[in-house]
Image (cartoon, rainbow, N blue to C red):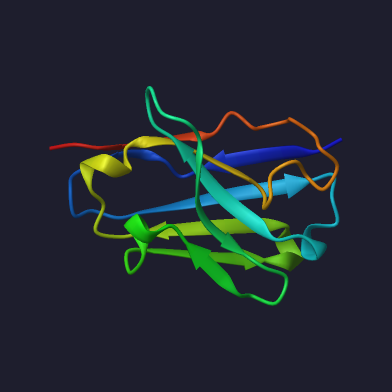
Length: 119
């Protein structure tokens, strides 16, 4: 059974930084591409960034140059360093495999961590 624990969110002013963490259990973490997703009020959940088994990375255009995804396979943890935050980054952030589903069409999502960017 997959379990995740996302943390690191909070309230930050525009231009500020946050570092999100997501600990994962129940899968062979190192075998999967891991992603960070976000869902803003009234919008669909979207992929923000993903990191593959070999460390390759992809980002949605709106966060390129500001966000950095990384992973620690020894600790089954994926990180998202967010710099130069903007109000439009406000959302609940989740981690999951990429594509989502934990490799087995599992609809489980953690509770996420709230990021609010506001002055």
